[in-house]
Image 1 (tube, rainbow, N blue to C red):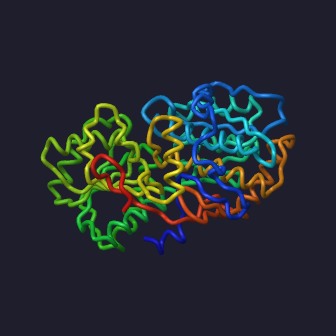
Image 2 (image 1 turned 120 degrees about the vertical axis):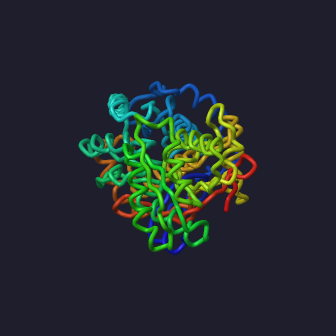
Image 3 (image 1 turned 90 degrees about the horizontal axis):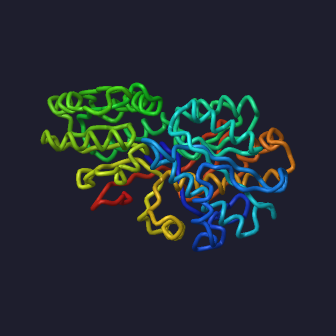
Length: 407
């Protein structure tokens, strides 16, 4: 696993020293800047209060803060705001403050494009977003046309960063699928595996395809592979019964947490208790409303961040996040936090100034992103290639006693 992902690439979150640029993602503080909680709330989807264009770096954000994927978007929004407040309190980027404006896309491609246009009208210079893959793939077409720099914290589809102006913090879908098969095989978790995936979603189907391609190399037999779509995502009894009848010891779920919570509940009712294994889309399942978290006991998932990790960087971030928002951060929060500090490092490396056009800033950051190295929440010594993919080591967690525990 470690060997594979030193070549592949990953995703996610917390604070650390920017080794390439000599700055500290934690902003040198153990807690968020005073007023972090208020500033995040005040920027709830509306344009941030700002001064004259050119007097500050304007970073936009896009993601779902309402709707089915709101757990992801809210975490990204909160953590990005936390990082912005820390940086501003520490003097900004080369003495220049950051203005941050986050727009809700409800995990919808058309609404994401509308959000992008709103941020353009606000004179956005850099985009942190979008959070989920399908909206991100739609927006990257626009940022490419405008030559605007885009760093998605968690958009994992290959197409989400298909142009030279776009980078990501997280692993791509192909890397997640291959890495999952390797992890299951190398740790002897099962030999007979079933897969339940969303064929109407590029995130889910992309991970499934590379998982299936690697499974045979790991001695895994896929005994059942059943799809669903956005129009049939509430009853999984047929898929589960086929997995059970085929003797699947493990069910791989390359899907989002909402459907996964339904699957776990229906599996329990039919008396089927295999090992369940997923990717970063399952992060958030413990926060599903009215979900019995006991049903998720033992669920495993690949993720670049575990809030209970004992390293100093993680614990500082978790404390700051809880103080600001009263919640425990997930990996999407970590991705976003690392993303803001990566943008800071790239701006400092390139020596750009806020009076430059967004296009000129983009041209400079395309190069400087490949020159920085940061120690972040989601990986130490993270670097980026010209293809926009990150280089870092992946991690896995297991849900134990209602919490994510590092493995």
